[in-house]
Each structure stands twice: as C-alpha cells, then as structure tokens.
Image: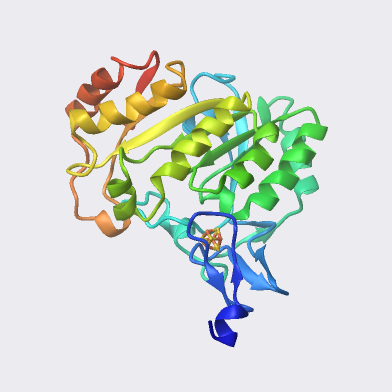
Length: 283
Ligand code: SF4
C-alpha cells in the first residue's frame, strides 16, 4: 500500500466505507476527513424545516393527528435514480443554502410548538439523516430532555453500530425498504442487508417502526417483488405497517411514467397476505 493510501481514513458510518484523504468529502457529501477522522460536515446545517402532520412522514400508527417539527440537511449515501428529494439529498454543502442551528435551539423550537400546534418533537428527514447521525443523536438527547419525542425517516443504509447507538433515542421511525433484493439495491446505489438489519435493530430496541416501499414501474412492481418485501417485514413482525406508495417522475427518471394507481392497490392486496397493516400512499 502506498503512503497516500495509508494516509486515508475509512468512514465507519455506512457500508460504502469511503476511504478519504485529509480534507476529502465522502460519497454522501455530508462527511469529511478532518484531523485523521471522518467527521459530520453537515452538523447543524439545516436546509429545510417545517411543521408536518406525522402522517406525512409517513407514519400512521404512532400519535395520529399530531404534528412534528421536521428538519433536514443535505447529502445522502444512495443514488436512487428516482430520488424524490434530489435538490437537497443529492447536493453538498457548497451547493445548497442552509441555516445553522444547535441541537438545543431546535429542541427549544420544538417545545414552543407543543402547545397550540400539537407538536410532539423533532423528525429527522428530507435528506438522509444517518449520514449526519451525530447531529441526530445530539438533537434527540435535547428533545428527550424536554419530554418530547424523536422521529427518524431514513433509507436505513447504515452500519449496525450507528443504528444501535441512536435506537434508544428514537420513538418512531419510517425506514425505506426500496426493493426486494441485493440486485435492486445495486441499481439504486445502496446496501440491501444493512437496510434489513436497521429495521430489525430499531424494532428490537422498542422503537415504533413503519416501512415504505415506493413502487417504481418496471423495477419493483411485480407481485413477487412486493411479496418478498412483505415476507421480510413479517419475519421481523407482521404488525409492522407497510406503506406501498406511488412513484412520480423525478430526477434521473423524470421521463418515466407515474405508477398506475391500480398497480399500487393490487400490490397492497399482495402485501396484506402477510402483514396486518398495509396502506396505499400518494394515490
Ligand atoms: S456515511 Fe458518507 S462518507 Fe461515510 S461511508 Fe457512507 S457515504 Fe462514505
């Protein structure tokens, strides 16, 4: 191994394990090698903030009717061609506008919205939160200290150690299970087994877990695809809700057709053979 190779630092956060030279930014655009460590470069950088109904996450069986103050930064460790949020998730710090906020400031903002606005806490969402998991952890501690709750919306593509560290702080999560196989995840630029592991870890930790599958025409829309996804979820628990949602043309699939509504309802029926709660989304 050359000296330059030896000087590289390996990021332990997700299965990509980027090997970064000092000052270099990782594949996710959210982490950077600095002082011999790979640090969270998007820490405290908020690109989006909104008070959303919890059903918009989507989470349907945890505190229904409540709102949650939802924050996002930038960056993602996947490259789904159908990304519905590419303007922040597929960009880095020099390419988006953001405001800075500390975990305590965001938790205080969440608390101010509790009375009158029905806010239950903070949701970490919009881009991929786990590439900046340290910020999620620090915000979640502040939120808990104020007696409120933490919601995670994630692609689940992270190493088990990261998920185990934040799981006790997360009250409810929606994890994308985007496809039924390693092959699908190779196409979407992610890691199938780590997503399955994340779902299991969060569920075992007592977190309320729901799962979303975006149905992309020609990619994961067969009965066998959805049956395989439902079978995995049922192996964790048949009580985990699954949201089968409709794709709209976006980013590198802007020329594709939206998922026919009839396909979504057919696939909901397929999943209901294994799971107790399956919902159609975006229809
Ligand atoms: S979190 Fe980012 S920097 Fe770390 S391995 Fe994954 S893509 Fe690379």
